[in-house]
Image (cartoon, rainbow, N blue to C red; front, side, top):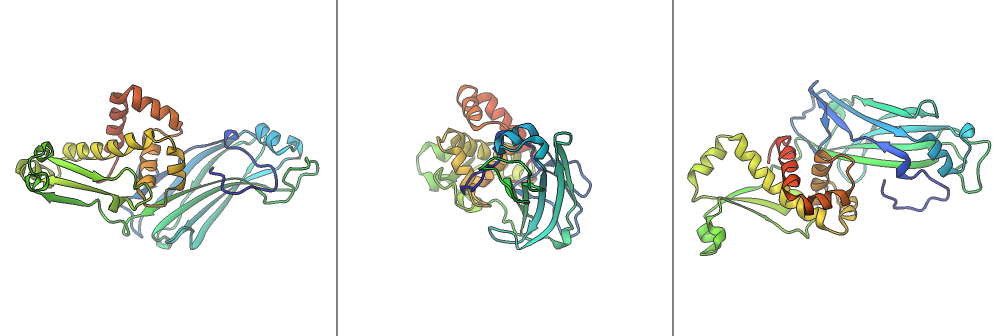
Length: 302
């Protein structure tokens, strides 16, 4: 959870909550990590959203300065939808009690696709389910006090433009530079993390390689994956090298280059600390790029 406000009472730190990634199943298919963009979705699709969350009840009680026997917690899971930074409609609000004997929750939600539009907001919040009879001076004391919160946003098919691809004559584009002999070129600016992904990255294909273009147009799966690896690799290798990578991800708007990069990281290395990824990219670049092949294999399209 990214702290953006100062609460007037004690809260539960991230270290006491093990929040697994969201998984999604479309039309009864195998669950996959929820992407930044849900491909193959339409208003008739059957969707199932699942995740596991475990709360260290003893640790939460200590952080809140409330004796365990006086502490009652609940996880709220909300599903919202609509365009914009916040959901226009909240469709579902599921509640899961948390106690020392029941500290692990398996969330399973089936939203009605006919009621969805533009974006899907999945908000998970830990709250007090009852006022404690014994608590410290800075402890939360009111029912439904928010103690921890996390939000995941994914874009629905239908509103998402396809990845921009342009065919160009590289001899004209680069003149006598070495780049003119490349079969493709990924144009992007590493400083554009908050820019819309589909405007920040453009793939140029060299028209002087007709066999290459023919293979792409025929849907050559391996070649498409190779292009994806190059795009994903360039973006992620630059992002993990940034000293403020976590801040970039936390502040990245939905649909931005930074948000897309974050979704790739969740897909390839769920729950892996950023400093670990940075070390892997620096000391084991071959293995880091091999992992990117696995990410590209799970992408539906460029």
